[in-house]
Length: 299
Length: 270
Image (tube, rainbow over all chains, first blue to last red; front, side):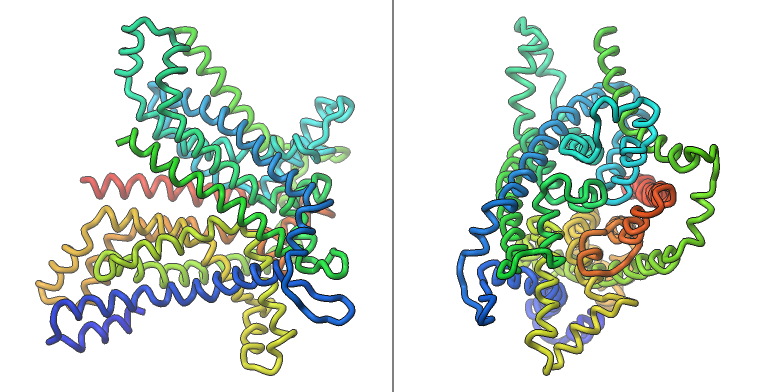
């Protein structure tokens, strides 16, 4: 790209300043636009088109209808969608609360080294998910895991391959993500606000109820939404851990892509994907205004 | 104050337990095998395990190719946004955040549909050859394209942060008025100042590609993460041992990024 830019830039040396600037600037963005149009746009349009396309199993003719979307919102598919939403909402809520506690403990600490260590570790752990995480937990709390064996958890009815098992594993990357998201907001809480509240006779609880939480609320909600989206899209961890023991929309899509669907419902995977995109878009639509709002307090 | 400290240490201790126990237990799981006592066999088997070398190599090749593609696309674009085409900024911003709205599993559902068009509709056109070529199992270029798209959001964020820290326009104008051509100004004045951001973006892309599972598995390729998964069914100890190792490597990468990033930030300040 630099080469194209070079020649276009050097050749019209006598041309007016205006023109000389604009042309290469434009050209440098074009490859990005072209590649994303091909690598992202075509698959996205194919998904949209396929989600509304139904193939007649006998004649092979295709027609547009909402049958796939209807199917994706009924029966096992709907159970999976609801299961995913429940799992993501619960783990995001827990992650928000626990992440806030941890971040508060770290931010108010006077040990600088501790703060740096926790924030760096959070940055690393928040990026950590997928197969290795699942196997680490299987080795710890799975059927023959170390803790399971030594504490005899199986007799007490424990199973990692369940809804709550997934919550515990998801928290491993959700809590650090929350710590990273909420720390700037906590650092933005001025100590003067607490002192002012105390001077007016407020208790610690009243300070949190009337001052700190309202200021933190946009950041907290924004963090919750971010965690929700991250848990909602997770597939590798669940696939490596529970197989299909817990109904999740990502597992259903994977199943359908691999061809395990009823005749005439080949495109249900695409309809489910569209459902997921809609939920994720909703998440972003809530997140962005909240983030902007919380940025106001951190200035 | 004492009560507050107690509370803080309780929170930190719980967090420490939760985050360290699975790691420690994984290590114990791999070396303390029931019926065999302490053994390091799992780690010894890794190197000779069938598929280990080839899948790791594939992952590394994919990572290098993805980094090259995404930087070649993004660096000129983001520099141009600062220099000559600021009005395109909202467009690029939206494009780079779209992958956040489409989860990987939905993305791969779309990709596999497109790839199926090859045999179904395009078998007589040159597109068919292209679609087959990008699915070549020894180097599936389709994965490079997918990973490049998936890494756009944080590559954009990393490069944008780097560019914000330097005044590109002034740098280029200064270099130009000293007689440098525009490419020379870009290569020798702007790029060296972006070294931190470029490294940042590369590391994050590397971590993404090495750990990526969803797209590769559902398109039927076997890079490293998919290989670990496939080993898990039969050889539990081996798969956990590889997981522990891959975790350590990824963390070392990300930690070095954190350390390096911190240092370059101070350097920029000074």
